[in-house]
Length: 259
Image 1 (cartoon, one colour):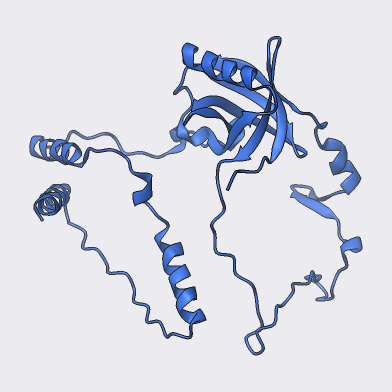
Image 2: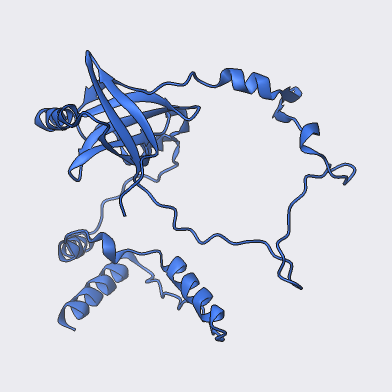
């Protein structure tokens, strides 16, 4: 089934404008539960009540507030609406950087980009980014919210990945790391052997949400009236030393390779 566009925008930089469509790069596969009454399996609803009196509070009587060092600051919907950025279709690319400048902590959510009418400009931009080996950093407003993101070539199309803002990133300097220690020569050699033996190509299909798969199997079985016995996952015996862990890992890989 063909993807459906979520939003339309125009990539701009210099005097160039490229109309594009945004498509979801991720899909929510979470199993969503409903809250039901145990006795008759009817849906239950939540009500907002006052913590002080226990009485229900209507939506018209509620306001948003923020706790501060001087008490609660109340905010009106009109005030919040005035803070929303102006609607725009412009995806403004502000500069280009070499690939790899941003670490993984910056990346948030990917969107595929497709041409919105002018296919030639889309593929010209695709080719230009590839020939210069760069990624574009830009900002835009989508559905009342401001974003920053990186524009890059990926998997045969243009991809726009939203980035986290700097104030959201926790610097590693805040870690209380112990001092680096020199490893024993034998441990280092075993670690190198282990890395070499485990080298290979990444196969995304090998990695699945096992909890979700087991949950779906449980739901399917119960739907058919079957009784399901669920056992706890077996525990793992952790080696007492780094050397023991390396030896156990090497032995397990050799056994797998010959078995």
